[in-house]
Image (tube, rainbow, N blue to C red; front, side, top):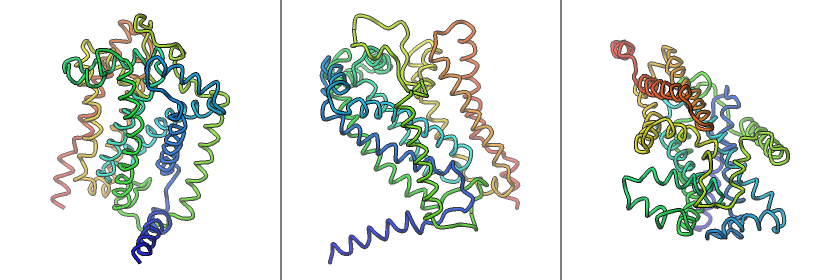
Amino acid sequence: MTNNITVIFAVNLLLSQLVTYSVPINLNSNWNIGFILGIVLVMQILTGLILSFNYVAIAPEAYYSIAYILEDIHNGYMYRYLHSNGVCMFFMFMYAHLVKGLWYSCTYLPLSWYTGIVILMLSYAIGFMGYVLPYGQMSYWGATVIINLFYWNKGLTELLLGNYSVNSSTLSRFYILHFILPFVVLVVILVHIYYLHLNSSTNPLSVVDSYSSIRFAPTTLASDIYMMAITAMLIVCQLSYAVITLFTGDSDNSILADPLMTPLHIVPEWYLLPFYGTLKLLPTKLSGLVTMLVFVQTLVQTVEQRNTATVLSLYNVHRTYSYRRVLLIPILVTLGYLGMYHLNLFTTQVGIYVLILYLLIGITSTTCSSTRLQSYRMA
């Protein structure tokens, strides 16, 4: 009897969230990105499980285990490159999902936004630790730079490294966390979806309530499947022809890590470049770390105008705030571009101005108009 009740509950829950769940009728393809992110995450977990069967988290055997997977395991090259390119796909869609939230819905769904920021931060940690695991030249020195940001806390640095430099203990720690944290992300995603479905989805008009709605299935579900097919074709093209060269990684990472030879130019994966560009522009590691935390704080504070979300929608002035928030995106792209190359006097000055502009826009985007708020209260 108990088993029957459990099955009935699970079926009803599935039907309520995937079939009868009401969504606005005017959704566009921007609302398919969340579904695509879930599919790519599942693909990453599955390919990671396959790779973990033959990976050895010991230096320098970690490097040779990757070579063994590529050369001796049947279809090992496919799983390895599907995993390494998949993380780039994941962050590409993650950033697109972030822009969509900044433009449309972050002020109306604050709890979904907060859980989304948690997912983003966990994804950064997972991506960084996965980048270290191959024990290539760029992996080694990238880990050295990032972990040494905590030089002011010697105990924390030694806890992360397991010693005084990147070694087998570091790989073991990162390997365990890289394996466990994706399942933590899945749990946070369930919370994220719960808060999303609790208040229903937004729509391109950014209104609080939608009077014209349809069931999630079959129309919206069919749109998600259509976008999933397009994503699959993009992944196949990337694996076959490397159409997005930015996803292929640095060639120095195909060299075994050498603690005695520093690369001429350390470049992390592209999705971490804005943070690395910030580190290069500022004079000390601690100031770079504080600035990166300010970036995260700006994303969190973006939704703090939610108390005026109703008046902003009714008076159709929400786009003013959207424009300010979306201006943060080209600024981050500029910082990422600066992180890819050596800096000179001109690019350093440009970077400093961009940082200042980012902070100003971040502050003003979280400040609502007192005049509109007073008008709303008087009404």
